[in-house]
Length: 437
Image (cartoon, rainbow, N blue to C red; front, side, top):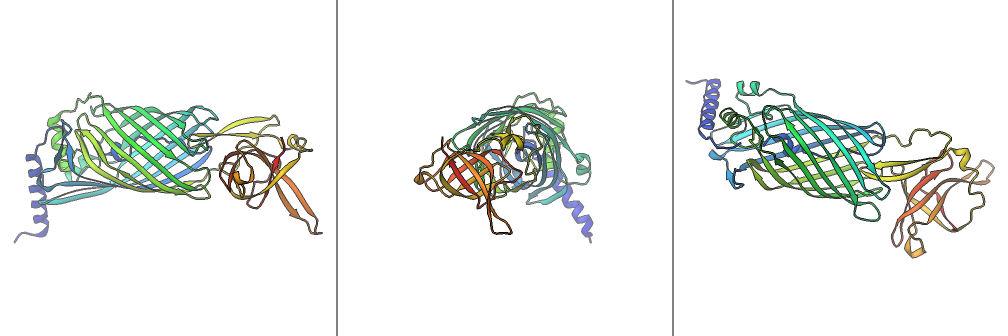
């Protein structure tokens, strides 16, 4: 009687032989489809940690004529990605980033199943903001290196699916962001790059076109648009070698070892930003078109934890204006030495009081309990005061900051802090007084 081990070995052998017979001409690398070219600029300075879990599944390919073709023998291929992304802002303009990637690859058919879990493709890179204006227009450059932490030779010897095509990718490009609303919450993003790939795989141009919503404090976050890759058709990979590897490693799916692949996918992301600036989101990607590429669906869930320091470095005694960035949106912040500020505004007069109801120190944003119905207009200036009662029962007020109205609704106003007068953050419950011009 055949032992269980021999039966399994025999089953894998049959599975491998069948895959070799199903020789489908043309062969996309797995990583750029799921772990795609994305803007890595974040908030000003400090650490951002972003864990993401993604699932990608396909049972058909786009062939050389852009027509969908099902995989033979009932085959389907899937990938589960666990990505731990880190981003560190060295300054308001320079960011370093990386990704520790774990991956599970599975191939299923009516003649056998195979799977493997290990380290996948890793990422290191840097981005630099070249240009930023207070009107919200921002241009950044980005360079990254994607490299394998696995061996397809080992996967082949063990009869397991491949975790990728084993190439090292170098990608250089940029992103342009531009505002679509006066509040700065809605903006557009255009991104494009040149990608070089080792092992004679084709160079390509990855690109994105997105509409984004990123609230100033807390609220819903949203992204919608398309992303894709255009092959430059420079692939010199030998199909005699690539196709058998692709068949054995991915069951005929063009998830790996693709020759001159191009593809286009929808990009939809929805989530929520908390009062502290942390984000939680879900992502969905659906294929629109392709050539020599897998036709698969991606689902991701992730979170973004911003550990940036709440305050910026100490400034010199000279008055200094800096442009602080938040996910590509510049916010002008006037930092002034405390002793200089205290001599200004001593005879200021006010004609309205409001209460601070919400604060985001990282974005220098505060919200008030009054709005258009109370006569507040965009561009007006408020001084924010803290009230304290000492041990003797005497009430003391301290002017903490000066802020400008950046958006206003019927019963709510958003302020952007321009300068601080004392070493004290704005807090909920403080009084905001409108300055008489």
